[in-house]
Length: 45
Image (cartoon, rainbow, N blue to C red; front, side, top):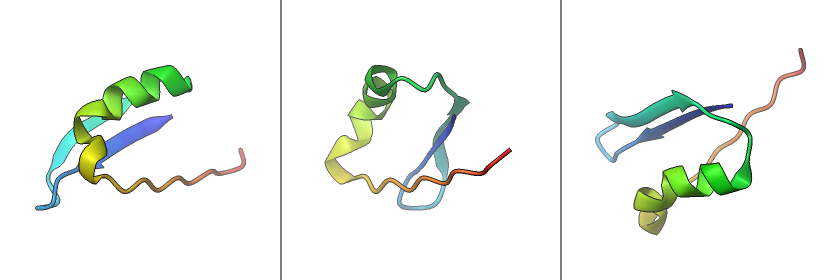
């Protein structure tokens, strides 16, 4: 799963391919959780 976090100016602050584990995802977004909007997209292979 690719995770990309942008700041208010549209600059990438985190972009990486991560394991699909909720605990790892929550750890990575922790510094940004106060003011974050999450969008997800799934595609069939």
